[in-house]
Structure formats: structure tokens, C-alpha cells
Image (cartoon, rainbow, N blue to C red; front, top):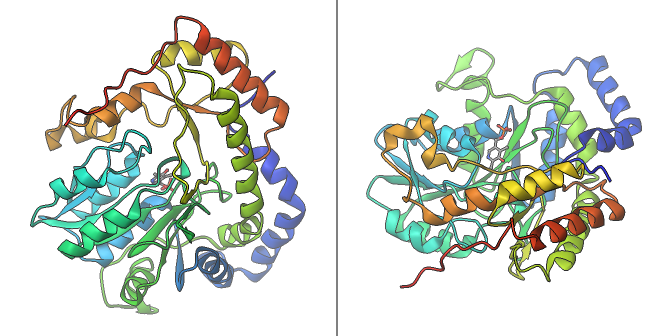
Length: 381
Ligand SMILES: *Cc1c(COP(=O)(O)O)cnc(C)c1O
């Protein structure tokens, strides 16, 4: 059975009847850059996240960068994040002028390890960006406690975590600001590029509102040097329609994840996601770990099953960051995971038959000797 890793076309086909009239309204009104359709979406998205404000911007990358600029992060400062993320998290730090500092991830949740965080803080640390990788919120309570002790800003990279929850609160609403991407393949995807910042902080809100529109307080009156990071009106209109379906779609993802969990539980060679009970995972990605990842991917591909790797090279080992002075061995857990991760097909519109076909193929391949069990050594103190 053919199972694609992701099929965004089906999702948009289902919603076409609702989306097309929304786009037509934008065309008729002419509110293409920012404007009322973006404002309506912002209101709905802030309500959804449980924050007082949401700001539509041009991408998740810009959302991250804007939060740092709003807190005057710049040259000479350090911002701590994890190496197991998409490049954009670190790029936003570099673009602000600050230096990215990485800390290793927790072996079970693949998110920032709070113990490593504490050790990495220096006088120069200005902000911390935990990443809710795959749609699983990082362990925010200890991270926020450490940040509060040192008076450091915390910005959530929630670009993979639309609708995820940590102890009953939505990802993005837990720290000084939360950043979202609406890249088409995300749980809430636009018809192009878009992103948002959500916050309860009035100062953060006011600054980003001005920064995203060339630092203007009113037309042609510029109080700071900003940039053009506005959201398109069409994206606002499309996202507002799609937001109404996000919860139901995330529930489908959770259902498929539960099927994968159950069907792979007996499989010793496969490590499935470990989700603490206080977390509602958004399953942007369903990631397993196996020792011989390439053999597994090849086997699945021969059976018509698509997979992904998120991400094959941890950020501290990217060529672009050679200058930071990290090397192989700097972050053993992140490096091991980058070798073992496989993302299985995960989207709301999968069918039970497809999910079972994938799980059957994974178990079958895992039982063959070529795949083998992860041998990441548990740290001995
Ligand atoms: C997608 C993503 C981003 C960047 O978002 P864009 O909208 O593509 O700029 C940042 N961080 C993470 C973890 C992401 O998955």
C-alpha cells in the first residue's frame, strides 16, 4: 500500500468550499498586506492560544527574530537553544547579532534538558529558546524557573506545536512569547509563507507591532528601525478558516499516533515517542528511533511508504556554524538522535489501513537483523 509521508492536497481539497469564498472576500476588499483579515485571524488565534495578543507576521523565522529584537538582543549577547531543531531557530539568533549557544536534549523527550541549560548560562545570556520539537512541548516549568532566577527572557519555538498543551495550557502561551510558523506542511498551514507571535506581554506586543511594519507608529513616521514582516491578507483569511478545523485535525493525529504506539510497543528495536502525562502532543511529526535507520528507510520506501528525517544534521554540526567551535561529540544525545530518527507518515487524513500498513512494515523490518536496536548509552553520573 502506498502511504505518502505527507499529503497537504487532500486537506485543502476538503476545505476548498470554505476557503475559496474567504479568498474572494480578500480580493474584493483589496486588503492584501496586513489589514482586517489578518486582524480577524489574530483575534481568533490569540483566543485559541489563550494569550492576550497574537501578531501575524511573514514566517516563523521572522516571528523568532522579532521577539529577540523586541528584547534588544544583539551583538555581544548569547541566546541558548538546542541543536535538535530546524536551522531557523539558530538563524534568528544569529540574525539578531547574538551568538547561538546550544545545550543537549533529553534522551526521552528530544527537547531541551533543563540541567544542561542551567550550566550554559553566563552573564551574556539574554534569552532562551526552547523548541517544542515534533509538537511535544519542552519541560517548561524548570526552564522558566531557571530563567526567572537569572532574569532571562524565554521565547517558545512553537513552530511545530500548534494546539499542543503543557499542564493544560497551550504551547506558545507559556513564556514571554511564543512563535508559530504556518508554512504549508505545519499542523496549521497557510497557502504560502506566514507566521505569528503570541504573547501576554504588552511591551513585546507593542514593539513587534511596530517592528514588523518598518518601525512605523503611523504611516511614514518611523520610531525604530524595523523590517517588512507583515502577513498577507490572503494568508490571514485562509488561516482563519483552517484554525476552526485544527482541534479536530490534531485529534486525528493523536489517534494515529496511538495506533502507531500500540502496534510498535512489542518491537524491541524501535523506540517510540515518550510523552509525559501532563502533555498533549500535537504530533506534527511521529518520530521513531532505530539503530540502522538507512536500512529501515530503504525497506519502507520499497514498500511505497514515505518517511522523513527531522533532522539529519544537528545545527551545531552544520557547515554554516563551523565558526562557533562545536564539534562531533559536543552534544552526544542530539547527535545520536540525528542518526536514528525516522519520521513516519503523519497527517490527519491518513486512514487506519494506511497507518496499520506502515506499522506492520516497520515491525517486520525491525525484526530483520539489519535494523537493530538503538544503543544510546544512558548517562552514568
Ligand atoms: C518551520 C520551523 C521554523 C521556521 O518557520 P518558517 O515559517 O518556515 O520560517 C522554525 N522552527 C521550527 C522548529 C520549525 O519547524
